[in-house]
Amino acid sequence: MNFFDKFQNRKKELNSLLCIGLDPEFEKLPESIQKSNFALSEFCISIIDATHEFAVAYKPNIAFFERFGSKGFEEFEKTIYHLTSNYPNIPIIADCKRGDLANTSKEYAKYFFGDLKVDSITLSPYMGEDSIEPYLEYKNHAVFLLGLTSNPSSSDLQKLKSSTDKFFYEEVIDFSKKLNLKYKNQVGIVVGATHPEELKKIREKDAEQVFLIPGFGAQGGSLEALLPICGKNSLINSSRSIIFASNKSNFQESAHEEAKKIHLEMKKFYD
Image (cartoon, rainbow, N blue to C red; front, side, top):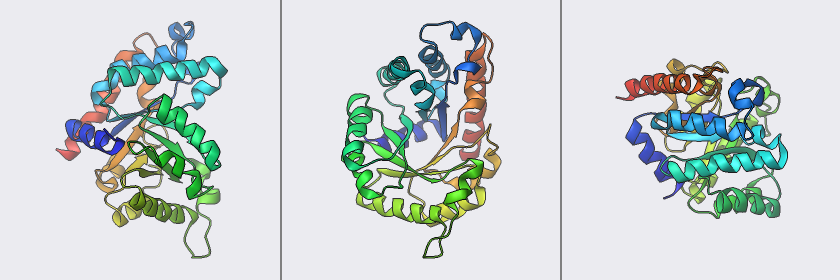
């Protein structure tokens, strides 16, 4: 099953848009987990098992694993394997923000889509279409291009005006839409929850493209602002507010309750 179908099926099953980000920052892990030889994957697997009934998708961020070199990659792969083996119906978005020459992209695509079998990844579109196409050759997989990101300095470049008098992020949005027409349902866009006015305008122009919306929760985005404007083809990501709801021994229960709370808020809105 391809990414888009998995997403649609899971979304309809839960009547929710919740994507749970797996950002296992080592210093924030419970002390009992920090002592483990495989702290990162043990923590992520515990979070997954505690929250899977509420997750439309998971978004593991590879940066928190890469920091630890080869062992970190091993733990990232353990986390992905746990998801693909135990919850194959839940889409995985590998948050790796790659973006390189076509021959390099081909190698990344082989790793993430061929070997790990994640459903989607995040990409920087800065190098253009030929840097993205190697991923799109994997027909059952998708990419999310960085459009308007949630960080405070996103406007440094993303809100520069182009020669067409559009903001740069608007050019990226248009580019992603054209690419998604060429590769049907394989190209989504990242639009931060911290830009609700822009998000509303982007969604009004395209009801179909899948949006990945980070920045909800710890970064300040609110469900009250997002749900009426984001459309049903969106994944609203929450990371820290769920996975670090507690750093005590009850971290699994706390993550479960926080994910359940967000899930019910979303479900109430769409019911």
